[in-house]
Image 1: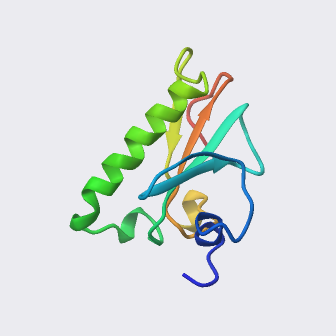
Image 2 (image 1 turned 135 degrees about the horizontal axis):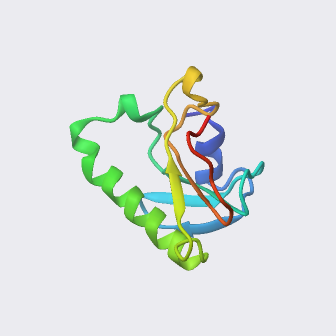
Length: 114
């Protein structure tokens, strides 16, 4: 999508601290982290949010979760636990309308979130 910030990061038009990438997705550090480990995992394909995912994209969703697990392991977040967050819509806190998973780790995370 032409004006999508995350599409531009995925295409290399905007710099980011990339921690993982493959042909289906890219993961980079959040510019406004709320935890010592705060990484965003996004599909390269523009999908506005989880509500826009189709049945044909099931494998992509599974891939994103496995990538999140791998990054948590690689960055040391698995030892004490990590959280995956996926917001959908304005009231849920979604500010960039490109599907993304937040990987949060490195500190005690409270419950309930938000």
